[in-house]
Length: 102
Image 1 (spheres, rainbow, N blue to C red):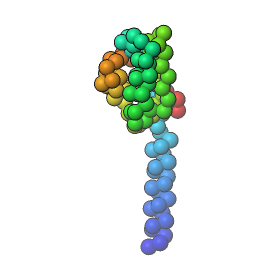
Image 2 (tube, rainbow, N blue to C red):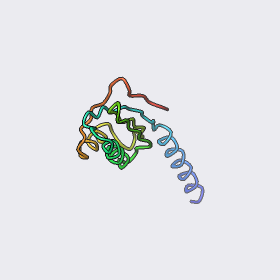
Image 3 (tube, one colour):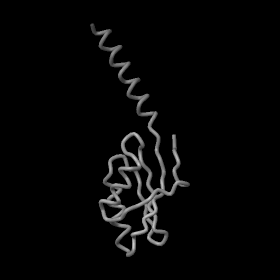
């Protein structure tokens, strides 16, 4: 019985490690044309930062862009664009910016 528990625990640990290691960090740039004043990037950054799985957000008022690093096992691009839209700043994905980090 104890041997069975140990083997089961070892299997579950190996499985969870495998699942975690398959997560990839994505990096994407959003075009946020509605950022028209200096406080807009702060609002966009807060909205994106609240999305589960987001690891880093940087906004640039001059370029009207938000740069986001996120765990693709915890969130999606749609959830990120929804977050900016719900904050009053619809965004689009800069298709040339999407990158994965293994």
